[in-house]
Length: 309
Image (cartoon, rainbow, N blue to C red):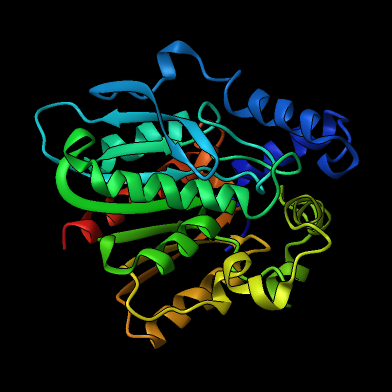
């Protein structure tokens, strides 16, 4: 299937703006750029309505972390999803993924706890992972104060999908499901999609290397830590059922689908769906593309069904 025409127009607009590539700037500049696209362009009338939104703090690996709890309209109890945002472990925050969490809350009828984990390069690996693990363990012990139901899930997009996969490997049957949206699962692997989709499609090969250089310190013992950096190399047995989402024109497509196959081989229940015509980041691109918005609606419905299977 060809690239979605509306996403093609969006990419052309970004190119014509003349801004330097992310990897040629600083993390601070990259964070401002992401907020400009995902926060500043949201009009008040476009904010997805949910029942309630509460800012709170949750335990992290080295102190309290900001978090945001979304609840659907109506009366619970609901399952709870701990959501870990994308952004290459370097950019992203609660606000950049506010609309994503609102859609999940509404479409899948669940409570969403979005966690603001620490970012590199100020706090490189394993800081963000430690925050994700600690916050999810806390959520497991406080479900009555979150969605009120007994089911806990973890999920995220891109880097957040990576963290979610590692958390799921650590917590096993504590979780009822995991939602991995175009996850980064094997940064050390070589896949055709990295070459096919590594330029001009929003997420580039150079950008991924820039993220990795910030996230993984040069002195990291990769032999000892690879399973926590690249979850494809971890233990896939007895992890929670998974929805693994990929995009046709994404450099991470093949490693995400390889992860789905590894889970199946380990006996895990997996639903893997590839959205044709889509690029990395499509979950945030509904305002620019009707097809992206439809894909998000479908994805959220699939996850709600998986969680309640």
